[in-house]
Image (cartoon, rainbow over all chains, first blue to last red):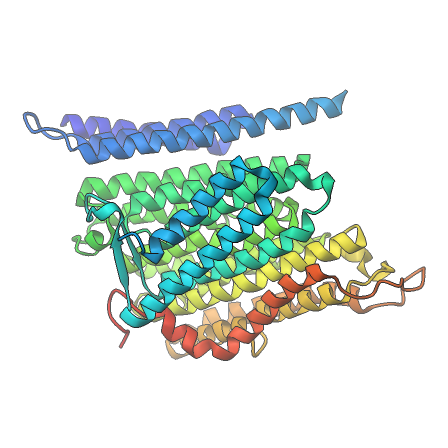
Length: 96
Length: 483
């Protein structure tokens, strides 16, 4: 088993755990965190795509993609968190 | 090149979005000007494509695979024109929907979100590599969720959050597929993918991307987020979401299947089966819907299903023809559904509610909005001479000639269902015997009815020029004109 296989399978496993959470979790925050886990898994896989047997230098393209992906996911998470907070405050206000 | 229309189509709405965000007082003027200017850029692009078949440009002079290339052909310009033209008319309609001081906040946020959405969609239609497509669908998702929750009600926020989850998950599945593709091919540009050796891993990558796109475009059974999101948004936002946003994912799907011809009989058939389920389930749900906007939203689920049936109607050997039928139905639905959602919004604004059961009790009859709704319904049901009819007719003809009779049956049942659920609305429009009060003075129309009416007339009128539209869609088809 080569290192890239191990990392690749880990990435897929992490994605699968996140997917299960995103589909099954009830709590809003939990579902968001599960989606974050999915993004980690996908990022992992991209990093593996960059790996080359040393002494070859790793491929920089997937690294650039992962960084872009992180930026995208951060902004998506921020929007989702803002929505959750707003919803939370609307719901508690109505309960009073 | 700095005078390239593709660059303008991408950056005009982006800079417009920034400008309206910085200068909220001038939002209407800047917003309308940006959309109109983008329409102009698309017109120039259409002229170029008409002359050359396909146009390519490398942003900043960096060629692919290192830089980002933009490419336009008949299909992408068709999608761009639909987006800009529908977008411009919806923008004009939004002027009326968001007027008044009470809507100040809504107006202030509508324009930047809508321009950002336009940027994302133009980026998808011009993009040439799958990672950029991923980034653009995320841009679209963020702007679309913003538009969904624009009204700020609890129902809209709930629906928007559900939409957000579905969108993120869809995009991540797509990203995972992109990762697999890079792992196996080492390239991300579409032109590179077509040279790739077909393999099981590549098929798996395509399957992941397709599932992600199905989630984004709301194909049954991944449609769960759509009805609530589209029914609870404000009218212009619903028109944009239902008419345009779901089409971006459909377009990527069509492109991927062109450049990754890996679909076998089972995959194509199962897409058609899912489409058939969407047509039947969505039809039944539309029959049961209590509110007008919810009915229209379920009809979007039905139409997405129909587009997938159109894609699958001739099996894998017919894919080089059937994508055109799917594109025609995408165009027909985009125009008609935007008109229909805006008309539904107008009816709701005049009546004060949109409960279908009580439509016939209303003493106010916004006649022109009702007429617009009916015209849009004609195209969505698929009655001649509308564009929807041409699309459905080509579907049925193709399915018959290739011997796939089951698609004919499903399409006919879907058509009957759509006649049935739209008849519920028409009955409400035309019955006067259940009214308790005499019909009020205001019978007619307002200036705000004109944009949806124009769109509905376009949906009917485009059917008359379907042949030139179809030959335009084919321009620059990467595999040459189909035999």
